[in-house]
Length: 78
Length: 189
Image 1 (spheres, rainbow over the protein chains, first blue to last red):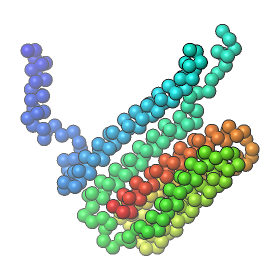
Image 2 (cartoon, rainbow over the protein chains, first blue to last red):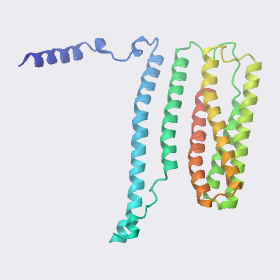
Image 3 (cartoon, rainbow over the protein chains, first blue to last red):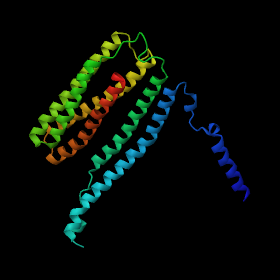
Image 4 (cartoon, rainbow over the protein chains, first blue to last red):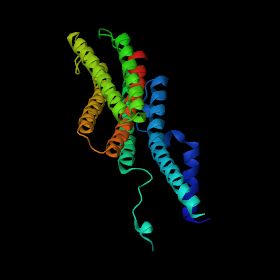
């Protein structure tokens, strides 16, 4: 095992064994109650998912419209 | 190569509609950010609404919500109607939007008289930021609709009016769809 791989294995083991030290959310750990923590988590999840849903939905809509527009042309060529 | 092959074809999605859809995506993020901030402020508060602050008028705003939802129906009728009838449905939509804004304005004045200024508390500040942002969007939608109606009366081609109406309809439906979410979160929850 190379030195780089050993370091990665140690880092991975630390991340698994000491999750508290690997907190990435700057506000979640400061939540004063379970209700506040749940709100932080829910809003962070919503704000992460929403742009993906919007862009994905837009892309699907454009794709469907392009396909619908292409159908009559293909049937004319056939 | 034939001349038909060289003739430009209409895009499958009109540019105005595509631009409006992208714009509404950014608007959805704006409201999601404001709602998130509101929810976090509420979760952190020991009591919501804080003691001594006036309560929001749930009943009047409920009726006002129905008015705004009705305007979505009239807008849909306008989008599906023939040219002459479409203008009448658009005028009805405009009137309902203006009524919604007038009731909201009266409600705000009453709240201000009861001491709920924007700087009175976090509760008041978040209320005015969230509901005010939506109010500004309704005002922009009403203004856009008024311009559309005025330009339609100036007799542009039916196709131009229909294209403008389609983009306007998307914006209006978005503004209407956001309101019930805000009503439930801010007034009822």
